[in-house]
Length: 507
Ligand code: C2O
Image (tube, rainbow, N blue to C red):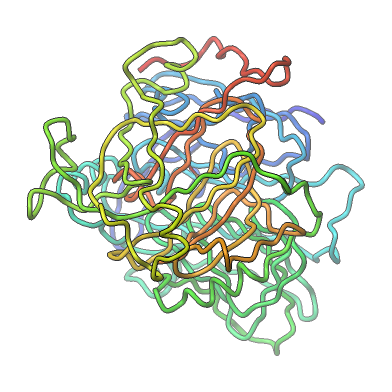
């Protein structure tokens, strides 16, 4: 592959939307941000220069970062934020990766405006495994807020109440005619009758999952999270924050205007989502681990926090001495004050622990539990608690939602890996009745765990480093719906985390 260089400057941009003028954080004063174009196996080098008054980092969402954990981007997991006036250079190789991915800020709530597409074309001369579309368009679903996002995060966390709702939902940054003062702030695609178009859909949403559809037109999914899928035709698709989907649309209706629309995900739509998940099949059948040696259960819940002396204040206000918090295995993740990767690499003690708890649901609960029965103990513990995996472990992970309060599914994103989604269902996971697809499961980086349901994923832990796994609804991430996986080094040089780059920012 070749090397692609990009210059990313974090800069403020004055925009006028929804009858308001405000300054938003952007890359290179573009909103949405610049598209990064590359080809499979290329090396990508992005120099980030922070010319804004905010801290910033960039995460390359869906890039597997083989042996380049230092360039992954989540603040306090792999790096300190890049402070105003500082620079940091991200470098990684798109090994065996192609398709639609995206990049976004991974500090506070800045990703609400700091995001853009990452388009990876197949190698020269390698066609798409479907009819070459007449044209391609990037379609990014986003949220627009009239408030300062860093301040908003602080306010929401201090209030201890559930998250606020965006002021507008946007397509490529355009709110569209539903909103005040945006009758002409609309994203349009002109199409020719009879031609087929490929839309690269990106869920750059902050706190909501969204449906997307086009009036009178069918959508044929051909790629999900940057991996080809067997064509699957549907009226509408659902994208959680963190999902990308390529869909083909044929301009097969009579000449006219057809609206492209997005709308929030509702509880009742679980079935539609399940239909899509059941319909997604990998086209290029991969190496699904047939045997496993590490079988993990993670529950996902919105719990009531017990407020102890060590509890961070933001988690401890509200009625009954506690507030809603989010957790995995009843642990509410606390972001550390220095990056876990640095503490791990330099053996600095006291910033994280390796005692991520096991599932509060026991195996027999999965067999006998009534659907949607939450664990008996719904109080959370707290801590920067990590789960350590041996190099090369063949991991099966059952993600069980125990939510009784939430109505949306949880888009769980794993950094540093894609995983096979081998099973998906409602109610409690039951090992006796669950059926797994080990033949052609989709290979994804984000999985919407259905409310009151479960998802089963498999991957081989062959990329050493510290990798965040978290709900991609930003408010849930803040509430602690997160864990860091530490994947230890193997024996060979290609199994060992490299040294940090010299320009790593300091906290
Ligand atoms: Cu796209 Cu940790 O996020």
